[in-house]
Length: 197
Image 1 (cartoon, rainbow, N blue to C red):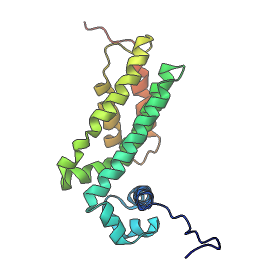
Image 2: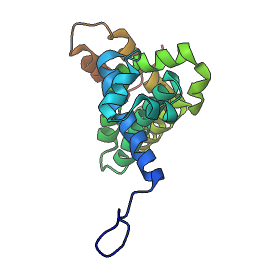
Image 3: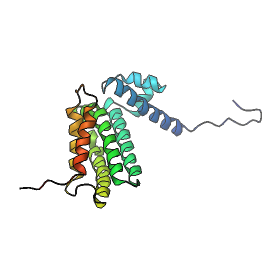
Image 4: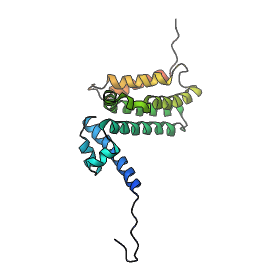
């Protein structure tokens, strides 16, 4: 088809269409997995993204590939938040906000991580744990340099504590319990180290 001036209308490059389809699939997969868990229908993901199953499988040949992409996207978002918060005036507020976001992440993504470990442990070679540790370490170091966070605390300590809260409250009927437990962790983070007798 041509215009009245004989020019062919501009069309988006296929690469752009493919990139947009991939981004839309990941976004809709996050929704579907959040609602129905990691075993949710991939056809439903494709339907919500407005593409056919064939398009989904061209981007993600199996379920673990899509789970990995979703988990990677969430972790990158978490790391970007840490980078943004690192420029905050208050190092304490930055660390606190990020740990609260990390707790939400840990609780929401338990099923995804577990499914990946069962289906294809090697897929986790993107080293999600290292990315999260690095983000936590940067924010904790800022608070320690300003003398507000305990000097004997490590990023691994904080990450393990938050993951522990997420795991231990997974089946809790008390919706406020995770936040209360995190508050205890934060109180200890900015507290005074206990003296060994």
